[in-house]
Length: 249
Image 1 (cartoon, rainbow, N blue to C red):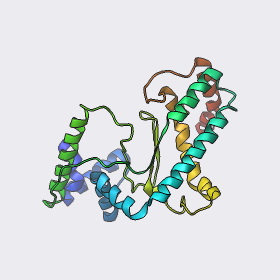
Image 2 (cartoon, one colour):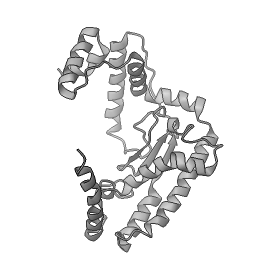
Image 3 (cartoon, helix red, strand yellow):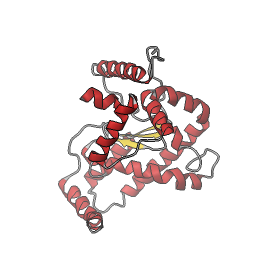
Image 4 (tube, rainbow, N blue to C red):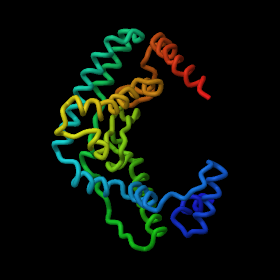
């Protein structure tokens, strides 16, 4: 069942139709994704590093990376200054929070170095190629278990218009695809970049200090570093948001 469920989207129409019925019952989704969408996300997920390299070479020059990194460093400074005005955070927790902010890594555009990959020969059909790619990825993951974890390893393709904070790595990851107009351009005025991409990156930065991020320190280790009074004050202020959403119907 697991094999059939995993690979049904890459098989014949009969299997795909069966998955449509399954998804309709389970999730209420009764349509098949358009072919272009299926092709795009299949390739993006299966060959993430390969398409990321091609995209960065074509659409993300060094100047863009430098400008985006400079914007992030300026935001780090402002974020630290804002922490001094937070009334619910006591001095000891504030000091630790600033230390975590200083340790926060910024991965901009894509990996600074590409992982070496063994040659992979494709061309045996959609399903067969998918199995080959999954097998190669499985071997890499097993091998990685014997290595120290990398704080710079990406889990998103550079072609993705999104950004994320990884609390286990205490790092912001900003793909090259979102560092494009209208969000960002190295030639835009600083105010425009701050209003375009800056709001998104500032949002991601706060995840290092929200109800989940506060459970991880600057090295990505899971442990309690906020004092109980600060946690209580934070949670009390968060209730206004919970109550607001609780009243939506």
